[in-house]
Amino acid sequence: MNIPQIQIRQEYGRIAINADNGTQEIEQPRPTMEMQQRSAKQTITRNRRGLEIDQERAWDALALGNNLKVMSKIYSMGKDIALKGIARRISEGKQLGDLTRGGNAIADISKDWRERFPEFDFRGPASSLNVDLSYTQDELNIDVERGGVDIDVQVNRPVHRYERGKLDIYMQQWPSINITVDLTA
Image (cartoon, rainbow, N blue to C red; front, side):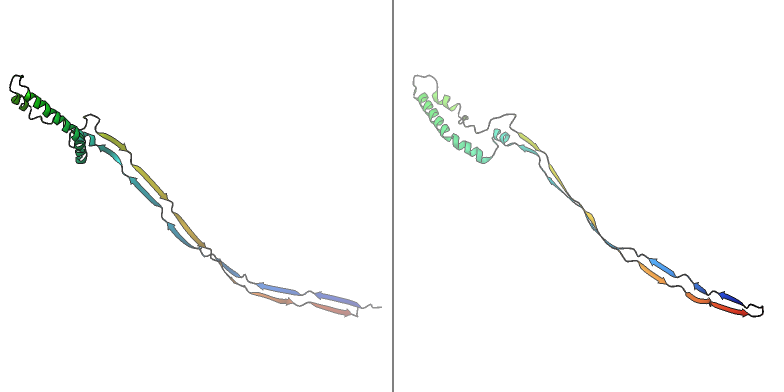
């Protein structure tokens, strides 16, 4: 007795993929930058002072001082000088009127005619301290205003380019089932 035999042969399907790589370019442009510089400022001021010499009292002691002060002194001494002049005239008159006194009274009186006003001294007091010196140091002021840099930065977006590669997907072998029956066996 012959038993028929069945043969089943199966072939799997195969998918083929053919791919090429894509290309990609990324570029980052530099940032846009604006800079503005503020200059520093320096201000220097100097108040000049220095040495001051006051010789007013020295000139006054030499009777060469300020005319207004000299005239003020003469004016203030005028009353006393007038009284002294009147007293001198009275004394000279008594000398002339004294007949008991011997000698020439007129010659004695006129002997000192050049010193008519010896009491009229409008000079200031003489002293080695009549000149005043004062020294004031200069003032130096330095003001500094700081400068700086103002920076404005704009970041630019990256530039991205992409090209796809080739992608082929295809059936290299289709699946199949082959069933055969052998009756002769």
